[in-house]
Every structure is written in C-alpha cells, then in structure tokens.
Length: 388
Image 1 (spheres, rainbow, N blue to C red):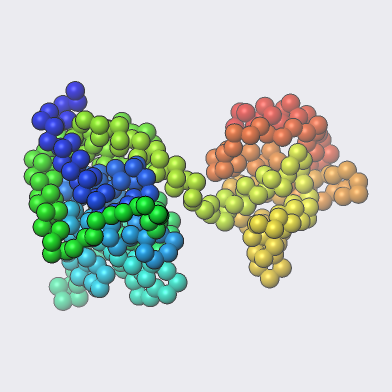
Image 2 (image 1 turned 30 degrees about the vertical axis):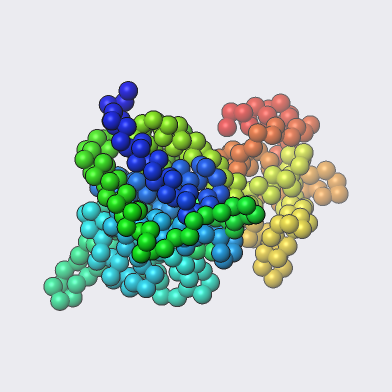
C-alpha cells in the first residue's frame, strides 16, 4: 500500500459521503464528472499542499441546466468559499492569502462574454492564479513601493457557453445539461440542507489538513501529461490518499474528461489553417499559391472565403504559415501553370506532426517538384516524413 494512503478508510468514506450528497441534489452528465467534482471539492481543503490550483468550469448551453445548483453544493462543501459575483477586483485580490479561500463565480459569462466590461483585473487573476508564485504587482503611491499580491487560489466558475481557452485549459470542465425524463433530484434549501454539508466540509478539512506534508510530497502517476497533469494532479493525489476505489475512479475521470475536452475544443485559427492545408494538398506534393487558396476557400465549412473582405489572401496565408517556418518558393509546375510561387508538402510535414497529428498515412505521389526543376521520388518524401 502507498504510504500516503489513509489506512483507516476514513478518506474513502468521506469522499463516498460527498458523492452521495452531490448526486442527491444535482444530475451530473456522467459518473466520471461526478467523481471529478467530488475530488475537486476535496482538493480545496488542502490548497496549501498544491503547486497548481485547478479551476472548475461548470458550463451549459442554456439556462436551467443545474449550473447554479451545482455551485450551491460546491459552496457548501468546499474550503472557505468566497463568492465573487458582485465583488470588486481589489476586494478579491486582498482576500487571497497564503491559505486562500475558494473563489466561486456564478454567471461567469458576464465576465468573459461579449457584454463584459471592466473585468480585466479579475481575468488576469483567474489566469495567473492557476500556478503558485505568480503574484500580481501593484504600486502603492502612499507607501512609495511596489506590492506583491498573491493570486494563487482554486476557483469554480459557472456560466452559459464556453469560458476563454486560457481558463478551460487550466480547468476541470463539466458540461451540464437539462434533466431528462425520469431524472429526479431532491430540492436544495440553503437553511435546511447547508448545515449538514458544511459539517461534511469540516470533516474533509480535518482529514486532509492532518496530512498536508504527505500531500505536498505526493507525486501520483498521471495518465496525462503537461498542463493537464498539472491541473489534475491535486485531484489524483487526494484520491490516492483516500484509497479504496477512488484512485481508479480518479484516473478514469481524468481520461474521460480530458478526452471530452479535446473532442469539444476548437483549434486556433492557425492550427485550423494547417489542418485545412493538409486536406487541400490531397495527394499533391506541391501546389501553386493560387491553387492552394482556391481549394481552401472552396470548403463551405471553413472560414477562409470570408477571412477578410476578399477572403484569405496570399499575403495573409504567408504571414500565418511563416510562424511555422513554412514559406512559399518558386516552383516549376507542369503546364499550364509553369513556374510560379507555391508551397511544397514536405515543408508542412513537421508542423502537421507537431500541431495537428493524424494517424492517417501521408498520401503518396510520384514526384515532388523542387526549385530549379530538380525532382525527388515519393520514396524519399516518405522517408523525410518518417524521419521528422
């Protein structure tokens, strides 16, 4: 048994009790989402142990999908909840300490949506506060000095529609939906139901606060990498500390929700262009710039025909592709094109592999025209693709 695991089974029992309470009042979109929310709530009680403060994004396509009710349960069971709906940015900044509260933001679409105004400080706080040691700097004119204000704090945000990529990339994202026929929950009443949930919060805090040193030293094996691992590590560490069925539940939740996020995420305009260029090339090994543009703009589901007053231009195409070290060159094409500016497939291979990889084989072609009229075989093209 992992030495950091609670041998008494108390932790697993507390997480089970929290799951029962959560699903009493809220219908979650999946068991994995419910497990993730339970672990996120528990992790708020051990914030001093974490290097990263994962966000919890509760989003839905329409009203009456249970977002606010879920936030009610989170508020009742998390560590030191701090509601920021009507709080000034200055008040929020001054409320974050070395043992921070849990920030809760309802109607977060009013902060990040098209009608948002004057919330740049709060946006900056939510972005910076994901990682420890990212303080905000403010000049105090009265004291004639620069102050460092902590930003590190876990935060839950509920709203309609997607949050900014910079938030969701640092978040456990739960996509709520309206209850279907036969899906029934108990009504939640603040005065009646919150005291029992606050007692559960106290029990979670007593359990986790007794082992902050072990949690801080924990390095749980993660099924994901990079920022996803940073975001989910506190939740997996709590699950491993609890033991029982929670370590497996945590890792299943990680894989399910990160896969869901990847599937639902929209690529940036630049990555979309790279992907569409791959489709536009088809089996060709080189294309004139004009032909590539025509093929890109011919796709009715792509944005390129309306990318500017005249659609995507050769200059704009070149500007975007240069970010990936892809440049047009003079190529000798078969008649009637003849010699013209264009792009070679081989120049895209590295960017495709890094930014929009696919399991599909690279289309083969007989020859690849090169500057100056030389030609290379499809064998060498494929070898170059494999080597990259």
